[in-house]
Amino acid sequence: MSESAPPPPAIVATKLSKRYGSGNTEVMAMQDASMTVASGEIVALLGPSGSGKSTFLTAIGLINPPNAGTIAIGGTPVLDGETARVNLRSFRRQHIGYVFQKSNLIPFLSAIENVQIAMQLGGMSRRTSRTRALELMDYLGVADRADNLPSMLSGGQQQRVAVARALANRPSVILADEPTAALDGHRGRQVMELFAKVAHEQGSAVIVVTHDHRSLDVFDTTYEMEDGIITKQLGNSLDDFRDLNQDANF
Ligand SMILES: Nc1ncnc2c1ncn2[C@@H]1O[C@H](COP(=O)(O)OP(=O)(O)OP(=O)(O)O)[C@@H](O)[C@H]1O
Image (tube, rainbow, N blue to C red):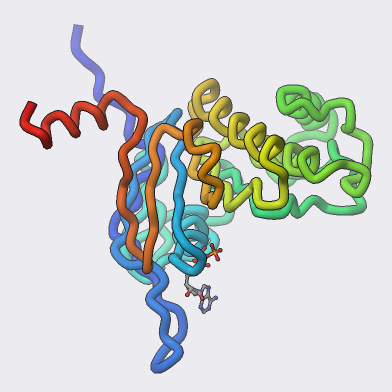
């Protein structure tokens, strides 16, 4: 029996750089930032304010292209510097789920309609999208609030609905920018555990930007960003311990 090639990593970001402004207002927000994330892996990106985390995440999310570097998602080259290799809007809708710091739910739609709309934009019928939205909301523990407006939900419930919306189109990549910033420690941890569950059970690659060091144990790998530069910290995976042992000449 011939061995089949391993699947490509879900995310390969190579040497991403981004400059804002010019002359004396120039800021080098990201410099040669690289990261590879496997399907089913959940990664934390830490770093002080202004270190470039959102710049990196929005580049991977195909919202804010880098000036230089390449991004491949699931083996497909999508960005080469500022040049798009695919239709970014439809690629993003199909493959990437994005969760912002605030839930950004549409205030005049019910919770379930907020989830459905992500699928209906992709052409799914109202009825099918309602069934899937209910399943997702059940998975996330907010099905009982499906018909409430966002203003009637707690911050944690709103963030769960936002996560359901991000998961709606079964993205292979989920990106979350400080998703627990508005939540207390307990609810914040619940949301982080949810992301880990989605990564490990559904095989999505998940990157979470966070300042919350209390939930770091849910992540497989931790990266730190400082002055636009990313470095990998020791992960929890076997490979990292193997690497460490090799470094120490065991
Ligand atoms: N649109 C922009 N125009 C000019 N400068 C920007 C822009 N966006 C970000 N910057 C600058 O780029 C640098 C990196 O910002 P970024 O928002 O990526 O950092 P961050 O690590 O996400 O910060 P925080 O944790 O405070 O959200 C900062 O110096 C910031 O002021």
